[in-house]
Each structure stands twice: as C-alpha cells, then as structure tokens.
Image (tube, rainbow, N blue to C red; front, side):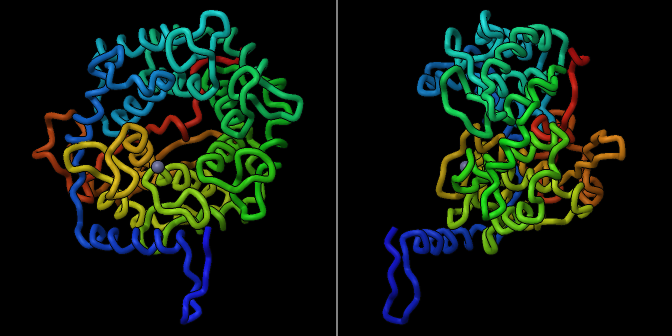
Amino acid sequence: MNNSLSEDNEISSYTLELQSETEEYIKNYLKIDQKFFRKNHIGFLKKVVAHLPLSSGFISLDASKPWILYWTVHALDLLSYPLSKELQNRIISTLKNIQNPITGGFGGGPGQISHLATSYAAVNCLAIIGTTEAFEIIDREKMYKWILSLKLSNGSFMMAQDMEVDVRGSYCAVNIAKLLGILTDPLCEKVAAFICECQTYEGGIGAVPNVEAHGGYTFCALAAMEILKATETLKLNDLLFWAVSRQMTLEGGFQGRTNKLVDGCYSFWQGGLFPILSNYFENNDLYSKDFLQRYIFNCCQNSKGGLLDKPSKPPDFYHSCYVLSGLSTSQHEYNKDLEGNYAVSTIEEVENDWVDDNSSETSPKDNTDTFSTTVVNDYDSSLVIITLYSEM
Ligand SMILES: [Zn+2]
C-alpha cells in the first residue's frame, strides 16, 4: 500500500482513492427510493433449485453444492416463497447423496471429503425444509463422533480432517450440534476459551488468535458464544464499538474490515451481530437500520432479480442470501427471556407497513414492492437457536 502526502499535506493512498471512487458512484444510487423486486428475486433463486442435480453451469462450484442449496433455500424462505413437496424431496435426495456414509458429515458433493462448512450448510438447509423426511437423512451418532474427531486440545476445531483451524469451525460445530441435540459437555469444553483468544485489540474477532478482526469471523464467534451461553466472556463494549464503526457513514451498508469498501453481504455478517448484542445492551437501536435498508434497496438489487455486493457487481446466490438475511435482521428483534429462551419478533413499524404480499409469487400486484412493503419472514436459521431433536 502506497501512502504519500500530497502538496497540500493530505494523505493519499490506493485504499483512499478506491473509497472516494466508491462514494462518488454510490451517491447517485442513494438519491432515489428504490422498489423491492421481490418477484424477480424469487425467479432468480428458483432457477437454481428447479434443475437439480445442479446443471453444468455450476461446475466451478462442484465442491459447494450444499452451500448453493442453503443460500437459495434460505433466501427463498426469507422471501416467504413456499417450496413444493416435490422440490423439497429433490433437495433432500441431493443432500442425502452428499452425506458421507462413513463419517456422517457432508462434503461439497458426492464422494467428497466431509467438511464442517458444507455440513453446516446441509444441516441448516434441511432445518429450513423442516420435515421428518429431511431430518431422517442425518446420521446423528456418526455426525457427533465425526465432529468430536475434529476437535483439538485447545478447544478449536479443524474444518475437516487435517485441514485448517479457525472460528468458522467453532461456529459450524456448535451450530450443527445444537440443531441436532448433540451439544454435549465434551463437545463444548474449552470452545469459548479459544474464541475469546481470537478477539483483537480492535474489538472485533479474527479467524484465529493474533490476526485481523473480520465481520464473517466475528459473526461466527459471537453466534457460537451465544449458543454456548458464554457471550459475556467476550469484551462486549469493545466488540460493540468495532461493530458500529463498520457501518459506512455515507453508504449506510457495512464493510467487513477496517479500511475496506462497503459490501452487501456484511449487511448480515456485521448487521447480524446487533440482534445478539441488543440483549446485552438492552437497546434495539445500536446501529442505523434505516440507513442499512437504504443501501440494500438502492445499491444491492438487480432489477431483473438477485442481490449483490455493490452497484458495479453482478448478482449471485451468496449475496442474495446474506443481503436478504441482513435485511431480515434489520426488521426483526431477537429477544431472550429470563430462562434463556429465544424469540424473534417483527419490528412494529415494519409490520404496520406490510401489505398483503406474503402468500405466493403470484399474489403481488406487480413486479415491485415499495420500500415499506418489503416482505421477509421471521425465520433466520443462522440466528434462531432451536433444537430439532431431544438431547442425546
Ligand atoms: Zn460480499
């Protein structure tokens, strides 16, 4: 990075130039109140799941099949689009073929090595479908033994046998275990202590100890701590300061790290921190939800369908999932009662503005919904902590 002083003693750098350029063109998008292209987003997402097994166009994503299914199924769920029974069955059978019969974990595709990230995607996808047929394909006992086999003595988890170690592993492991009712003491031991070591001097959380804080890793870490009921062992004041500082003052969206550009997917990775933090600070207005929603509506939509990073980028399934997830968390509150039970509620003002547009794709009056008529439902599998099975 070249930092230099100009003649009038202002610091200039490649990073600052990129930031100025981004602000300049985003300013133009922020001027108008954009519609919400719900029907077109549904059409964009449906193309993926309508042709299972995935078409040859996905060849470069051959090791990410459970992710593609999770991103699309979760995004369609957030848009209140009901999957037909036939489509549900095809998704379930696609995932069944990806489950490793020896480990019980899920790989990226049939015959591929079991991996915690793709297992997280597969289990959460099946949880959204939520039928007995979906749950029955999971071999809980093998999955439990496999997850434990990935655990290291310092409380961290390898993402796969002899593979990298970071807080994604911690989150994927405890998320899967919580959903499957296999969150035992041996599985939880020292997990929170490892995550605490990953909190940096900035307040955010890095992939491993002593690396830069990052939005994706910070969400994984905080969500894992919440599942472990150990959130308050983090330095929450520092974490909150770091998180609110990542909301861009002009754009309204979030950056993933200090000195990085705004990106739509951090609407969830950063925005998703606040519903959890709000319970500890007893404040549901820790960041500007309106400002984030303006960025999402004006800068993260392709009018023909699909959501995106920023206006210069094409839509994709990953960003469609996480931009909509960020929108959902900005329109709902996540509350914990005295017994530690959780509930998600719709923020009152948003609910009052809804129109009757959540029945099916054929019901909207036209292709667009206005700012105030965004329809998202109250299920966010990354945040709602539920148990699908009784404890082992
Ligand atoms: Zn992104």
